Image 1 (cartoon, rainbow, N blue to C red):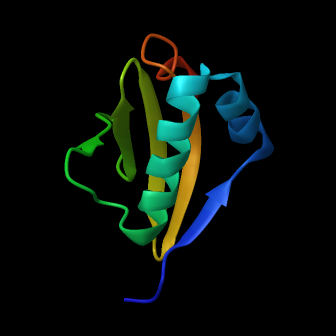
Image 2 (cartoon, rainbow, N blue to C red; image 1 turned 90 degrees about the vertical axis):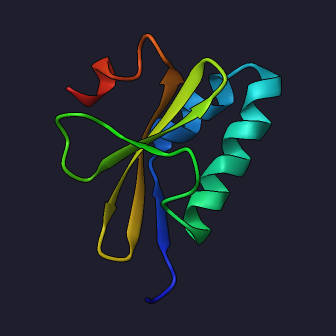
Length: 87
């Protein structure tokens, strides 16, 4: 399979900057790891969305979609808010 292309919107970058410092680094590292393998250990499918997955970073979630050889980061937010951003 060809290398994965990672897409991150400006709004996701802003959300990353707004995270607490200790979680920001962990989230950024997890996003970079998704570019290497979009299905890491511990990833879970988002119910009700065919190609959406989530990664847990403490109280925060990274939600992303996989299509072909592309990984698009959809949202990075607190667990109580992140699923509202999907609707």
